Length: 194
Image (cartoon, rainbow, N blue to C red; front, side, top):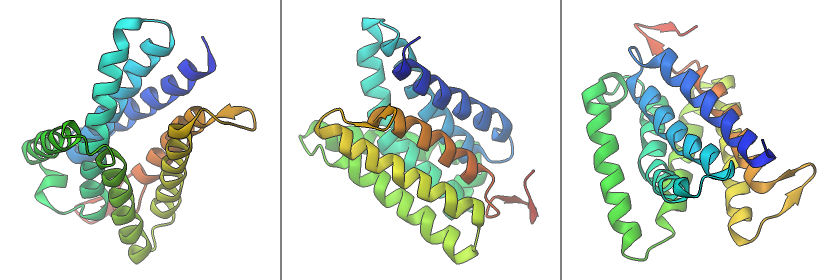
């Protein structure tokens, strides 16, 4: 197993754990993590040498950028909204934002896949700072770092310390998602989640 495969595997496992733990009570968070985990899962296959996984990895990475991040923002920034609390509403939102994102991206506006995650993380960061959610703020900052690594890595593969920018992106995203899933903003019936 190479280092790229391992970093995607860590992200996929983290996403699966968060999705499984939150599927009933926080469906938007669970569905966003499931979508990000699906992209990471295809990344594991891709970097393990399965050439047929390249297309699905690219597709689900784009879909996760356009739909998973807004759903994550809805789950954390607006935890009492029906989109955050009701599985059908979360699914409809994911499909709609994903379809819009894929359509815009297919017209040649390639920046859409970078703009949407940045705006989503800014919404999360604002909400967690207003609520003074330590876990949420730390998670949002880690996610911001993962987006910075993705932007740096788009230009060319860069090695920072022992890891490439892509590996940093995966590890920072996995850590950020874990901290955000522990955010004090995510309450069910007024009680913090454990």
